Length: 101
Image 1: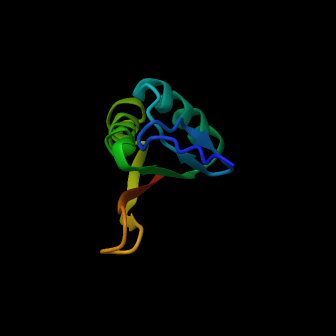
Image 2: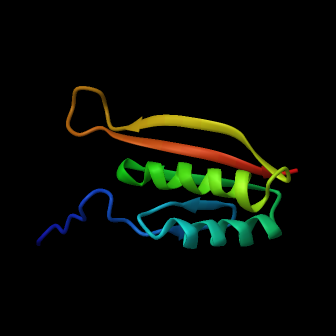
């Protein structure tokens, strides 16, 4: 059996009920997806790992400052690390909670 490993930072954007996992898709495309989610839900979670973290921050800024200026805000930002310190590779993660006002 051969184990296939995907390189970090090459994951694509995935969506679930109220969570959007940010990958390395174009930022404006992700922002439009988030905007359509916010039309259906009042609270969503943006999650990203590793190299996709700047994309998640950019999407949150685009939504709150440009697209829904004054009608949405960042409720909370959680930063974490996947992996145990000192053992193997550690991967930074971010979770941004956006709410519609």
